[in-house]
Amino acid sequence: MSDLIPKLDISYLIVKVLNGELEGTEEQKLKEWLDESEENKVLYLRVQMRKNRDQRLEVIRKLNKREAWKRIDHGTREHKYFIFKWIYRGIAVAIPMILLFSLYYNKLDRIDRELVKQEQREIHPGEMKAELILANGQCLVLDARKENSIESELEGVRILKENRGIRYECEDLEREIPFHELRVPRGGEYSITLEDGTEVYFNSETKFRYPVKFGERERKVFLEGEAYFKVKREENRPFSVEMGGNCIEVLGTEFNVRYYPEENKQITTLVSGKVKFISEGNKSLVLSPGEQAVLTHEGILSCTSVDVTLYTAWKDGNFVFRKQRLEEVLKTLARWYDVDVFYEDVSRKDVEFTGNIERFERFEEIIDLLRMTGDTDFEVKGKNIFVRCK
Image 1: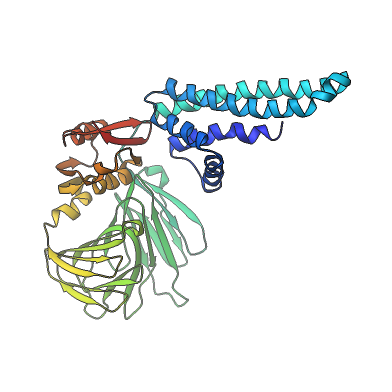
Image 2 (image 1 turned 90 degrees about the horizontal axis):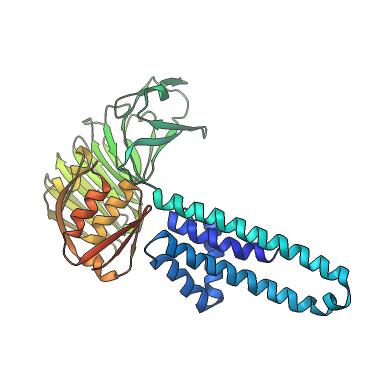
């Protein structure tokens, strides 16, 4: 009986894949099951390809029935001799089998409920939310609700709640200056006013590490994700942003930075002022307003003139795309709406899309807009988006 239970749990792992909730150890368990046979892989694909809940549930029922019978049949053969010879041993085998089938049908009911829940999950645009990790490891949940005010004073450091984020005020600190970290999840945005007056606006899936008070000679912060900076000008204290070993140096300026490691490139777009981009390999270039620096994963650094609106509109509540690959468009939307995208036809990644989208638009309307690209179709299953050719 104990050997069968893990096999029945495969159904739950498949449901969690559809929900986008599969975790590390569970992912390894599912992979091991898929590697057992080609039949397992075919069943898994059939579940993903089914167009409605009833069809997917039917495949999962067959999967459970097959795995249950495989184990029970094996156990029955092993005990066949004993069942015929000793009645009591037969009863000892039969009772666990009855319990096993009861467990099986209970699991099916729970799987049914999970699939219904997955189908009913609504897709909402992002909202103002983040986590603030203090120097002592304490985690504060940040959002827009008034009752969640975090106004506090921590050894000379005041954190004040503002409309779109938080603001720091600090006294002179004689001790070592502590660092805080802001984490903005998928489907979130937030902003900070640092103690020097610099304003930073954060897009979804971003981490930002910074000192609560800057030193006398420099102002240095660390970023992974996307942020828009309005740096307070100070001649004697340059401001720098470090991203994966590369650095941006500024005095007083406005610019947008995008660095998601999985995208294999870093993008810095200058709105006003002047910045210097310095790569880990000591390559550097100076940007003027309207210019953009791109550093590829291979270490190639280039500079081009761009329409800055395409890269900064997110801060003002819009997405602006101009002949952009569908894969890039959907990555941006996936972070904001917290959805997962799967390509049944990988050629769809290269389809170009042009359009202006309000950042708080209903997702269904965005999908209708994307369908106007031509021969590309989108199927929404819970919070999973399947992209295919029409």
